[in-house]
Amino acid sequence: MSHTLRKVGMRVIQHKEKGAVLITVSICLFLLLGIVALAIDGGLAYNERRSTQGAADHAALAAAWAACNAKGEAAAVQAGREAAAKNGYDDSDPDIEVNVRRLGGSQAKYEAVIRSTNETEFGAVIGQDDMSVASRAVADCLRKVWGGGYALFALGDQPCTNMELDFTGGGITVDGGVHSNGDLRLNGNNGNPSTINGLVTHVGTQTSNGVNITGGGPDQSDPVADPFELDFADFTPAANAGNPNFYQFGVLDNGALAPHENASGELVDSGIYYASSEIKNLDVKPAPGVRATFVSPGPIKLNPSSEVHYYHPSGVAVFSNHQLPPTCDNKAIQWTGAAEFTGLIYAPNGEIKFSMSEGATAMGALVGYNLDISGSKYSIKWTDVTGGGPEFQLEFEE
Image (cartoon, rainbow, N blue to C red; front, side, top):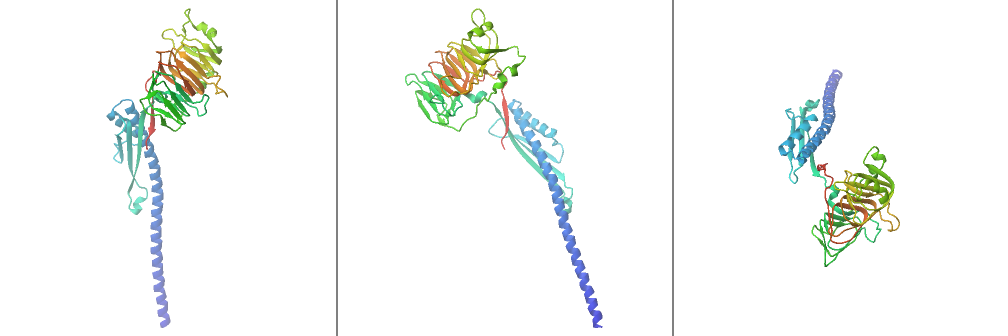
């Protein structure tokens, strides 16, 4: 009798163990399903997040660009919404929310926020029927200033003269920024001081005397990249094949230039004048309305009273790609007693030695590895000479 009872008791225990196992397995399956649901729906949410971020980026950029082009705030917001719609997020869909608005501090700084809500694939197993993702982008549109607004810019950090930017003379007026990536000397005339109407910055040492600075400085600065970064290859014969206004020489001097002048010695052919060796001792007197750009991989020397108004669309008037020699005997660009110029005087690898006639005015900028500026009673005025519409750059703020 007792033996039978013991067997019955064992059966009861076995049934309880089986029930416990079933409960444990059920819980594990439920947890496993939850993990699978999270993995699958999380992956879908991640992909959706990438998609909304791309659309938000496009929307913010479109709004900023429209504002830069004077479309007005309402039109900028609409441009952002349209960009979001083109990228798959039209807020006429009740599951999509698109907000585009202008932020303070800039007329063309816009924020775009896109929120997307989608049903989950397996989230309902754990009580999560839908999932929302949101992305945000902020873009600003800035007007690009031709040459960074610099009237004088020295690129070098190793002197050819005793200064990377050596500015001497009296009564010179500079309207625009002045920067040296090396040392800077402003040595004017206390009785007839020069004036710089712009910010003056330098990386190396600086001395200043006899110069009035109205724009601030001289201030210590980090190195600044070339504000133009022009590629000399764009001015070579290979890049200008078939251009009827491209004139090629070995050495360009007054004799070589004569076929392009009238009987009065005035330059009558607008275009790019390229010398594969050098340009030396050149007198340039353009006829009214004639524009020319002078280019050489070697040194360029223009005689006093020469006048140059840029032809190349970049705004370059004179461009020497001459490499800085071991001594300073051979300048990249030497033009003392200039009558006037319009455009950019550019020598990224060599020195520019420059002065102007009294009372003359330059409209543009001088950018060289080294600058040696002298003379008296003339003006250099930074000017956006390119003549086309304004240039803009778009950038993300966040």
